[in-house]
Image (cartoon, rainbow, N blue to C red; front, side, top):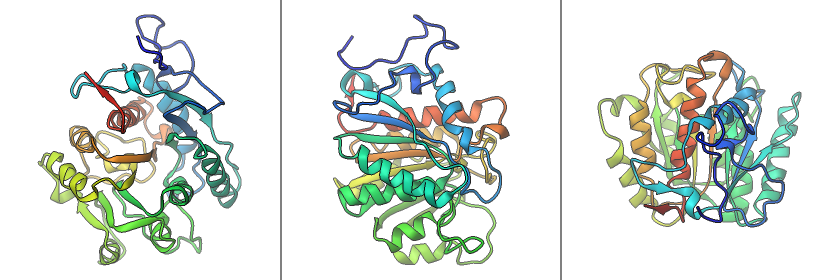
Length: 315
């Protein structure tokens, strides 16, 4: 046992008991001394199709009780070396997306006054824009790994410039990200035009459509991205709809022909060694998967990202 926070063991307290925090870690209000802060951003008023992601943080936390503290496949033992805690949910405005995005940005400004890596549980993908605004203020333009079925580079949606489908155009325009170190993985689906994805490629975004990844290990792709980024600060945003709906039906904008869960794990594990300064998991919509398996998958995705953060101990 170390002096760092440990998830409550299922051998000490039944998994259906205890606090509804990520992996049943302690909930804290004081971020002093934390290495990693897990937080929820329950928001779905930025979505364009099926809502329900406001319930994402609660169910991802609930399903995370199944997780154990050691990654047996990789040897990662994040809780041996990192002080991790759940800092609760941000108080978004249920009736105003613009006010909610401002709340997220201001909250991240406060969080980043501490030497901590924030990991957010969404929420729809609109939450990532204010996060990037705060992160870029701290680190400068970021390398970005964006795993998603959609490029989210629309100019506007119904006249609105800030939605879950416009995030990365705004991030590019505001110079929050380095376009030549931006990687979009898992893109697919039908489009409104042939240039739906290619416009962003012209900005410098490196895009890896899902159909080019079928039946392939993603470890080499991840290794190439790791080499390309080097030691630049990188933000990882994982949209659960990157996965095929057979694995993650509980999402707002599902697209067939997606990544498998083994591919996702290979990809994330290959990011060991990157200077990851923040991450999020978005678009888990529990009402569309009453089994809870999409949220369980989301919890595992977060654990895989946690397992490759800088400073993680390996056994």
